[in-house]
Image (cartoon, rainbow, N blue to C red; front, side, top):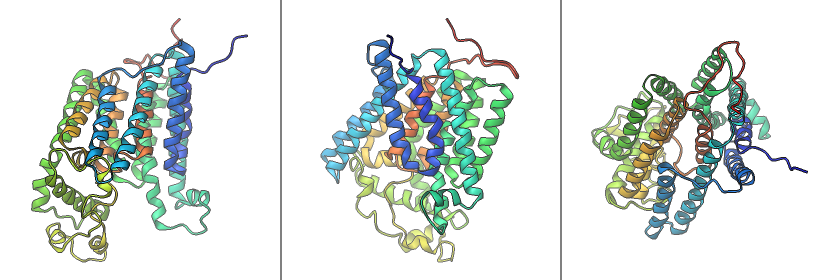
Length: 413
């Protein structure tokens, strides 16, 4: 009797069906969801084809190489064991994601169409849940946590979920639905995400839409342009930001969280200058000297941050709480020039490997979030990125989607 076996795309589809809503309720849930989905996808491919879907392609090996170099930096890292452990853990995670992407790419057309439908349904549910939570003053997430009173800070817990959904939103464009339905879901989803807390998610949504539209008009040119922009940004970020921050940026009128980022970046650039070649080692952002210090009077004056009621708290804020909120600066601070150059090559390779506008749009959205928010090594964010990579592998170069009111095309025989 023949045993039933799921398709390699099914676990990724299931993860994207439940991931958005799960991320709204608890963003840290995205890491175990991603691990389980990617692992099951690889195992399903092995069972179906009798061979492992080993990672292949320049982007996959550059990503694995980046964490290989990160492991080397444990030799001089401030916390060697943490540096080595994170490098090996995330390196394995990335290798698993690359293998799952290959498994999804080699799956049949019908299974990949179902993946896009599942992602669309999951995003619709997640965005609706996030919108309802925000509209009710975060009552939904407070109830899940058993809180009788809703603290004002709970609103910021929607930011990770909003960023993950901004990353995945372009997948709706590949769903086998009518053109108008896809456009309506994307427009409604983008509107809700822009209204949620988190400036990075807003910019990510807009960047995804802009780059996705550009890729439709100029497929090859869009890939080359985005790859070049990302590579240059990774390499030149400290050199571009340093002189600007040294002169000072009027920050009194911007959101306090954005002003805090300027102070963080200013501090990180001074630490980069202390070890410009090899960096401070993987995970050094958590322990680099002076990270728990507070902004001095000179920095507050330089950024126009007087002791007003709105900005007074910044004088007591830490200069580097956990990570720089800027992926390019974190790479340079921790992994030095070798890490930055590998990452720049990886960004270019990822852009050139994006065979569809959907994939390029997700890359643009993810890059904006990586440059403005969260730590580069946060497991939930890496998991969200790897699910995006695996799903992008299932998007055809030129999807043959149905016209308005039409039915999906038949699967190839």
